Image 1: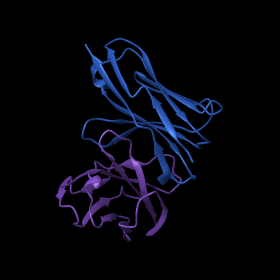
Image 2: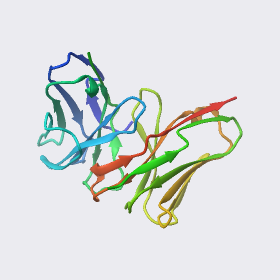
Image 3: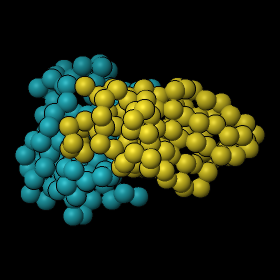
Image 4: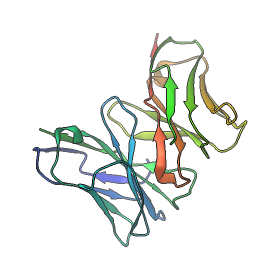
Length: 113
Length: 112
């Protein structure tokens, strides 16, 4: 167990809808990164939050947005869902953005129909 | 831009045999990571390799890093069924932890 928890674990949404995924970081960790893992692929970096500010973003459109709260938990919001958004969404927390190791949560499996 | 390639992508082994998974990366990476993922599960950190020549071992798994060749290897010794999983290597781009660039993964199946 890494101490990083994500909710919900599974979710089914309809194309065009909006979704919010949540991540509670490990105690003492102020950095949260989000990744998307499509079936059979490696995870792809979406963005990172450090002390409530976005601290880097991967090649994802603006309909992917996020927040980090004062307790360092985080949300990933996806608007106008597309079928290709179906994936496992992973968050990882670390004590700083440059810490050698990140700890991943169990993931949220999103299915868009 | 950092690119990470793993091979093989699929590996079927017999118990007791040895094998190596290779991870090549295209440009300088500050660190190299190895993760394990069981079906439907999250990523479990196996090794973080920080410098050229680094070698780390845990049980039947040993990882090494050659930064000059831009190559990391994950060696499996005397495989057992419990090692069946998908193994990912990842490099880091831009310094920040969030910019991990993953390979496509190697799906390992260890058969009796």
